[in-house]
Image 1 (cartoon, rainbow, N blue to C red):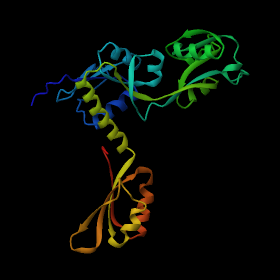
Image 2: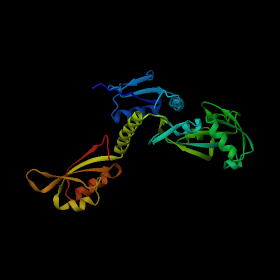
Image 3: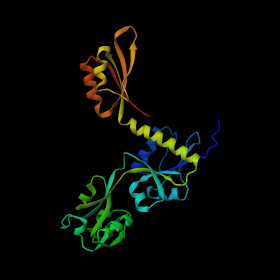
Image 4: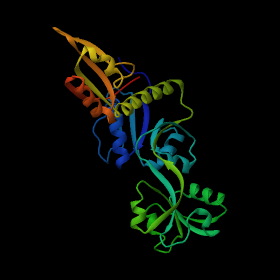
Length: 292
């Protein structure tokens, strides 16, 4: 049957680690896109229901505002900086970082309040930096840069930097120290605010598929042969969603097969407990998607 709906247009970063993670997340969620390289600008699923648009991460909110895309994957820091008129509809579990205020290691400042009233600030986030420092009673001279922010204090261009960091290693390698945190950021899914009802349904379906993948990453599927008399005890540490699925074994009245979803971090602890209760033939499998 031919799909008569308009394809849901999804904007994702065109390169970088976040781009790779988002592309893989979409494929795991069941969106069958062809392989891509850095020269790919658009791609469409075989069923024509979804179209990917590859653009700069910082441009994605503007593409949504211009109705070029319906949904986008970008950083919360970017959405905040641009004051984009979009709706955040999902937080993702990657791209985590902090936006911080940093100065040279030898400076005596320990927090933003310690800074002089008039300061030169290098940043790729002029709106966030300016508003934050003004609220702290400062009169910042914002110097907008698009990269290598950390080197500006050593070059004499700025007294302070406002930048994002995940581990802090780049700041340390440039002999800078963090004196304040402005906000925490991660990858987010955002959508246009004026989607029609059909597109809203498509977005909801996409979110359910994405959530099913994210939840499955934290789980393992476990199967084991166990003594029937131990089921009540097994249920105390392997509850699954409500209880393990129990199936009979052909020609064996004393043992049964259990199927259960387990938190990934507890799987080997659970296996050891099963073994002490007579569990055998234990299989551990990955879970691709999980819908509650």
